[in-house]
Image 1: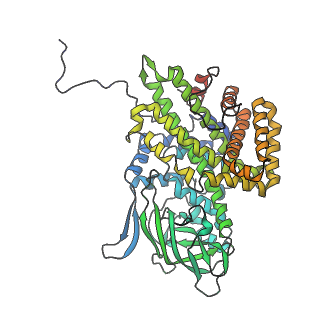
Image 2: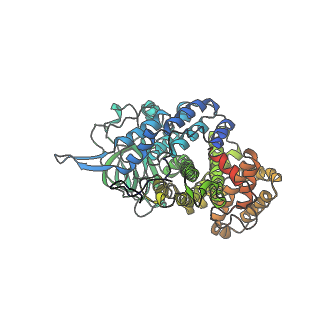
Length: 558
């Protein structure tokens, strides 16, 4: 008879060790090539150092801690004073300190040089694989800089604090702080994405008003991102103009008291739990008009262009994070006599996910180049104004299905909160919703093409010049052109299809130029060939003719 130790029921075997002690940048050949291609080689050593730090067990643990111990709101002090204080776990502040240390809140503005935007996007992508909630205030701070730069007096006061690489979490007046974070407040209960229906009102305090003048704001915001920020850019109406205006609303009033922006509650969100999102009311809150009166939407839309790019990068980062976890798991977990990664059907799933991830990576790095364009070339303008909202729509949508499929590779272990897969899955929807939902993005694509026809023509001409590289790619471009020349009402109803095809063509042309043929051919055959890519597809349906093993090895070396 076999003897068993008392209390021992089984041996733990065939469980996968946690993925740790790896370099997020060194193991990503696609990102490394894009960094060199887009002129950011000078930043490579910093990315290697950062990639190594992000892969350590201690740094990885910060993400779980920040999401397990969510922020708390304390509206009043023990003495009954209104304070609207927010308390975060120390892990949250550690994450923000890491982000600021790498300059990801300001790099292209604080250290302008060729490739700076690509360098910043690559670093943001690495940090997005660790944790998503801490990206929100960093993105808004980054996107606020080009808007604030147009207000010389205000920016002179803010410049050093915006560019500082130190995270200063203290809740004190801005003049006392070493660094600053900027948030934004646009949406209200009655409007959501339709910000033109906003009701918040601004009254000039000195009688005259105008750009740079002080106002008092009365109203509310239904989603007020990161209320602990040192200031927010807010949309409100004035008496003198029908359109909305943009206001700089600091957390503290000029006299040093807390500004009259009362936090009603924090949102209880599906994901993005480490970050605080709130509902607020303005009770004669102090604000300064920035930009021209009545031009608040165009003023803040410039900020949104940058935040939308970060939505694309953040979703691509979730893809990459889920993919490497799935590949790591499949290489260590055995079933039916061999490792999952050695089984043909699982290899097909992983290879298909790898294609999607690589396509998203080359796309956002190409967009980085367009955002760096200073000559305002028509083709680069098209990448910024047309492809960016299309990418925001498509890449963010694909991440929902992608993270679910990667979770399934883990099986039941992926569905529990101890591992990262459940968090990745909960994070996936936010980028589709934030900064404009899918329909808003697709309509924005059509609007941009109508407003900037020269840019649209330059982009399409460049793509038509590339189609000789692949027959299916040429046919896809012609289908896109046919849809774009249909009647206006047909185009609007087909806006999602148009945005999808724009992104798939963009991704395919980039892969043909910059990826091995076995990657580009597989992507085009399964996303753009006849009958593919028009209405969605399930991962793991690559034809057997393609080299699945080579695609998986390329994405994450063993």
